[in-house]
Length: 267
Ligand SMILES: Cc1cc2nc3c(=O)[nH]c(=O)nc-3n(C[C@H](O)[C@H](O)[C@H](O)COP(=O)(O)OP(=O)(O)OC[C@H]3O[C@@H](n4cnc5c(N)ncnc54)[C@H](O)[C@@H]3O)c2cc1C
Ligand code: FES
Image (cartoon, rainbow, N blue to C red; front, side):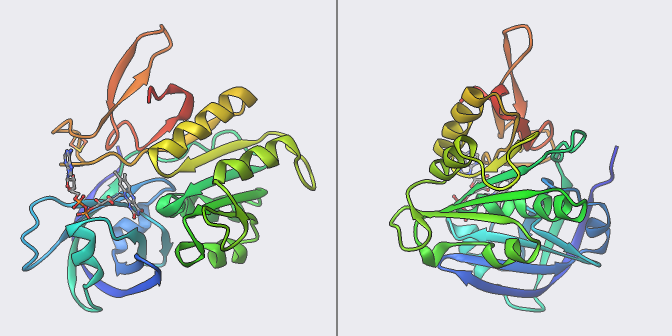
């Protein structure tokens, strides 16, 4: 079993990168050395915050002894986090959860991220490109001012498809429209052995699942349920998972997940 570390960590930078979204870099050598694509950290926002519970965030990037997380301001915890300054300390527990399964080589890998969901796919995207795997990235956001990760994906050589709800950048519509378009009219080298990796709001993930089931394409989904302990104890994070014998069971997103086969999830 892989080790988990609970380490005090100094913030290196915490920059706003889009409306309501921040990229936080911190020094976590032990976590950086062990992190795999899809895994997450559980962050305790320290002194003066009065927050009892940690908050979970996927590891966005790893560079030497640094990790980063890209987060959206949602409520109290992320609001406080966004005010944290360089040099301030947070407590980081991780790396947690399972990771994306790359035992079968995709050609191409298609990452589909809705809103901040693309944050959970970036470390995976980077690993895929390091291994020379063709990557198609579909990014959906409400509007151009909330678009995330475009530059990072360009830098690693992804074929990028952008949709915005209001049409202020890329094609107007949902990220699932891009997905359907590529599946039905593939560009360049076609789809030899496509595998889809997705993360985003629940409604979007359900729509992606319907598409992949229709097209019989394997799809791994990173779930982002509310969490308490993130250590498999409180059962606060469970989701309903289909079993091969036609039954189902509740599985813990923090321990059995966060990555599941999309068609196994009972939404
Ligand atoms: C594995 C994982 C990875 C994630 N990765 C990212 C990421 O990379 N980027 C990103 O932007 N977001 C990510 N999220 C979502 C992110 O964790 C939440 O947006 C964040 O916790 C919101 O915190 P908040 O205090 O701002 O919001 P609030 O809504 O104010 O508070 C959330 C807190 O309340 C608790 N809570 C609220 N409702 C319930 C409930 N019904 N039952 C139990 N507890 C409850 C939660 O456990 C949590 O501690 C991820 C979530 C998970 C599970
Ligand atoms: S968050 Fe406690 S069991 Fe998953």
